[in-house]
Picture 1: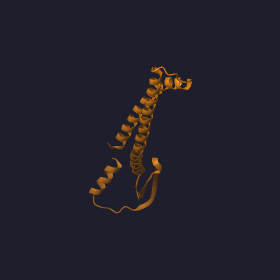
Picture 2: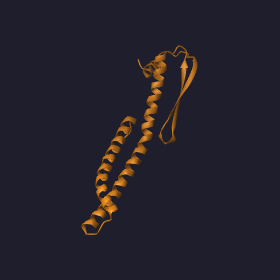
Picture 3: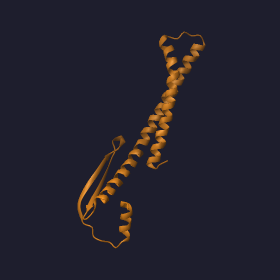
Picture 4: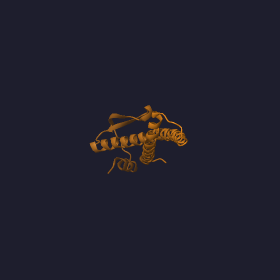
Amino acid sequence: MGFLARLLRRDQEAPRAATAVGNFQVNATLPNGRGISFSMYLLEGEDLSSINAKLDLCQEAAERQRFRCEIPELEAKREQMVKGMQQAREVLSELETRHKNGESLSSQERMNLKNLQVNIGKMNEEIDKGGEAIREAKLKAGVG
């Protein structure tokens, strides 16, 4: 029986005095300089499985909060990639237009023209991966 189920079952039973014989604290560092802290009591007669259940509960809560904190970072990173790709497309379009109009391109511009076509494809793949990372983080955090 899990910790939460035992805790709920205890609430339904006649109240009994539980003596705290110690305590512990779990701290987790989250993205964006955030942190989360949990304080738990060790009860007289408590077994290791109950203590582990408490720790597991803390870990699950901390992981959810970490995913929630990562979402804005992932969204901002993806947005930057989208803007970068738009700028690259504008530069590519300008170079292609100049080339089609018979203008002479410098060796650097010719290399940029060639590289931008490849890099835009790679940027698009990274944007797709970023979108998937956002969806996965939202799913794991139980939001959106």
